[in-house]
Length: 151
Ligand code: HEC
Image (cartoon, rainbow, N blue to C red; front, side):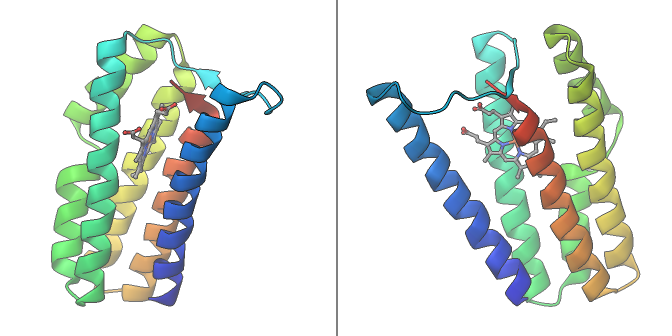
């Protein structure tokens, strides 16, 4: 549990720092450039994507809450419904990859959704330590894409 709480704070702090960094970019020119690959998709798609991303983070929050209550069944159900790999997600990830011409986006997206399925499998086995480990790896797959791409 401690690990998860710590992971959350790291995520929150990282989000906060990212915001600060952006403001610094506007005022000063000495800040280092963002060398991630820009995802070249239309603005309205970026808006939709960011909305979906915020929902992903909310989903992670709900999963952690269910785990804190030892409700592995609920945690697994939330993950399966919202983050699991399915034809709909495949179509969405493929569309972004095709529009942006970035094949890696599909691979990184798929890796995240498949890790979510792995998490679900641990919850089905009522394996809490395994579930927590998989959740931490799942958050790692979010970070992997964020390290690679930006808007
Ligand atoms: C395949 C790529 C990819 C994966 C996987 C991914 N993201 Fe993102 N995410 C992005 C991109 C691209 C942005 C936009 C970054 C920017 O604004 O420059 C983003 C932005 C975000 C934002 C900021 C939204 C906003 O309103 O500015 C949050 C929060 C977020 N992601 C959460 C998550 C979480 C949680 C996961 C994992 C469950 C996840 N993301 C997985 C690509 C990804």
